[in-house]
Length: 165
Image 1 (cartoon, rainbow, N blue to C red):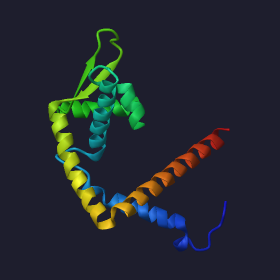
Image 2: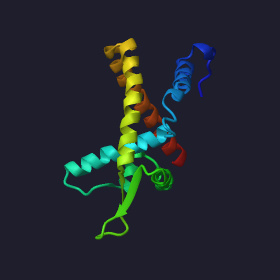
Image 3: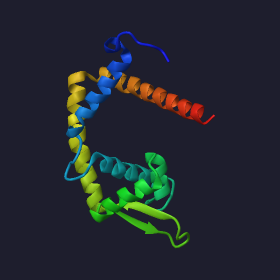
């Protein structure tokens, strides 16, 4: 392992500081109408998956296994979140007559309305950030951040495979 003389000047510290600062602005985006950001993302994913499925001639609703795959969450974690969202009347689950094992989920009208309201509020904040930073700078930040996260995920996979092998 490499030794570092000056931790304060190292780009790794700057990246960690930036991640911390992103975490510190999280309150701008959480608990909108009692809806945690994770629930907002879940509702968003269900809506997006549902639209894709309808475009391809599929049924109403999305398989819970597909939600799990698209959110990269375990099935138990997805089920737990869906239980909470269903209890609030934001999603509904159903089964098909052909395959009783397949459970589908879709947004209720209340869920659609809350998602849209939250989306407008969040996008309003992000529009202001884009206005202040500039569209070109923001697009560059998004592209570079995406590349950085992809690289970090690759490194994580490599480390996991090294530890197993």
